[in-house]
Image (cartoon, rainbow, N blue to C red; front, side, top):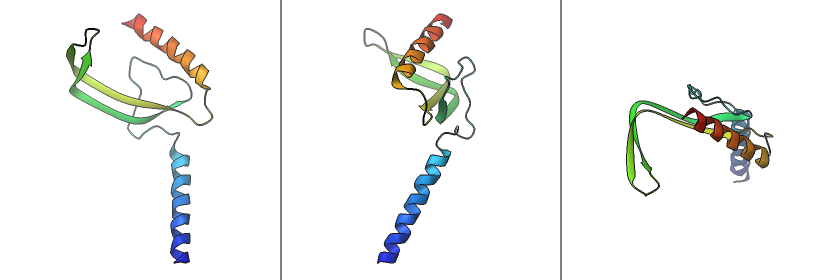
Length: 103
C-alpha cells in the first residue's frame, strides 16, 4: 500500500511540474486578434475562432442584442512573475482607451 501511495505522489508531482513548465506558452494554433496588439507579459491560455457565429449582448436598457459574424474568443493570462496588479490595471485602462478610439 505504501508503494502505491509513493507512486501516486510521484506521478502527481511530475504532472504539476509539467503543467508549470508549459503554463506560460501560447495555446497551440492560437494567435492575437489582427486589430489588437498583445499586452506584455501575457500568454494565450484559451483560443477559439469561428468564421460565423453569434453572441448576445445587453445594452444599457438591458435589451438583448445578438451580433453575428466572425467571432474570436481569446483568453489571456499573466505570466508567472509578470506585472503587479496596479500595473495591469493601468495598462488595461490604456488598452481600453486605445480600443475605444479605434471604434
